[in-house]
Image 1 (cartoon, one colour):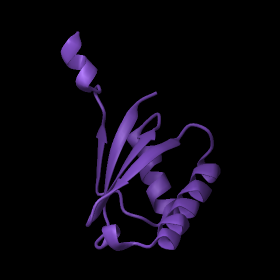
Image 2 (cartoon, rainbow, N blue to C red):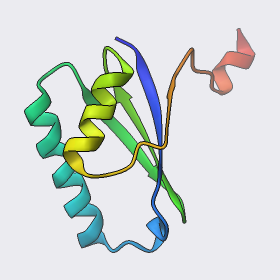
Image 3 (tube, rainbow, N blue to C red):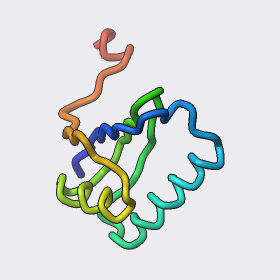
Image 4 (tube, helix red, strand yellow):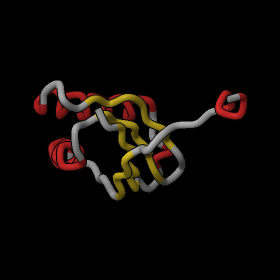
Length: 91
């Protein structure tokens, strides 16, 4: 299944409290349950002004639907073509 990076512009994201992040996560999980098993949240990275999320989904439209259900932005959605890491240099 394709993997995507979702860029979410969330001013002040890096200052969100643990409770606020928990609430956002709960909202996301609730939206995912409504959408079914075809979409999966893998992980998110919080910076000062943005949240970058990694998802598996069959298409971009399902990710957009998740954002609408959750009430958060999906400012840019990019399909991941491949991944590299330090072991890539060895091969």
